[in-house]
Amino acid sequence: MNRVILIILDSVGIGAMPDAHLYGDEGSNTLLNIYRNIENFKLENLEKMGLTHIVGLDEIKRNTLTPIASYGRLEELSPGKDTTTGHWEISGVVLDQPFPTYPNGFPDEILEALEKETGRGIIGNKAASGTAIIDELGAEHMQTGSIIAYTSADSVFQIAAHESIVPLGELYDICKKAREILRGKHAVGRVIARPFLGVSGSFKRTENRKDFSLEPTGKTMLDYITESSLEVVAIGKIEDIFVGRGITKAIHTKNNESGIEATLSEMRRDSKGLIFTNLVDFDMLYGHRNNIEGYGNALEAFDSKLPEILSALKPDDLLLISADHGCDPSTESTDHSREYVPLLVYHKYIQPTNLKTMIGFDIIAKTILDVLDIDNSIGNSSIKNLLI
Image 1 (spheres, one colour):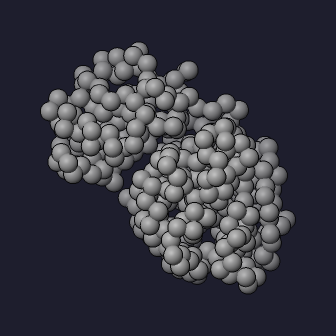
Image 2 (cartoon, helix red, strand yellow):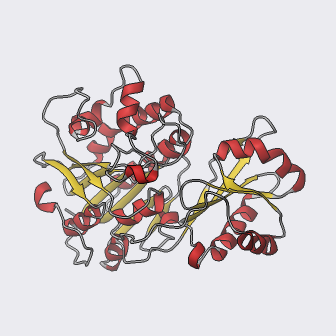
Image 3 (cartoon, helix red, strand yellow):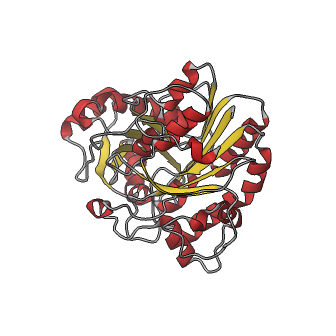
């Protein structure tokens, strides 16, 4: 195998992990609850790959034929349920401690330092839904020019601003300054720019979101691959999650559709290494907003493109489809959920295997590096022998 395509369906979890109760997520199952709540819901192509054979979704007897791919689920080793933790573990970096969270808002020292650096006031400073807080404070923001700072159950410092009040360039600069301030004991996983447009009563977030992550605390599969003079193409928010490290080409996308098209375009190009795609709409547009129907529609849209993705695979390509955490839209919570994630693996000559439940998202990194024949010190075991 010369090339691996890794597609992360952001937040598409497949059942509560054993410690989900510690996170308030008992009973969460993003995929299963979408199936249960949408009449005649079907993901024909993912099901052909083995999706509904995976524990956590196996009550859905949509497709009893032998799957065309290998299938299983992964249990996270790191504490947490956020994008950074999930993607880092997928890349081979397992955390011992969770990133700090701020359910009661950030300390005054952080806000005062940011106000001093930016010259703008700060309003909000609480845990809130992103759409709800711009409805609540958007008008005040437009009148005063103060930026809206808020968080969630995850380790994030989010800054919302109207694009006509705080231009994108300035908003991104503010986030960079916040990132520098939020170090040490206050090193949140991500600072996120959340621009919006519209008028009071009908504010709407734009697609110009940008993430400012911490740099990975260990060596990732991206580092190993680029050090071996192979390509790493990062599509979607992958470059932001890894702060550009270990990436040879970055393609930023606005939505799932553009992410899929960018992935297909890169697959058609001759290259060796890794194409690493994050499709964020499931999480950003539907999971956090408890929009079951929208989430289902987005899954169906991806599923409809899967035959094209499979057809674009070259003989030496390996495709992996997985997720980074859950975000069950059927629960009262608007936050991520602590869930297993599915793993589907396919190449043109695969002998389909039930991979069952595997411990550690870093199995993905270990396997990819093994497939590409790259020596590494990532701790988990490769499942290459089960796939090729």
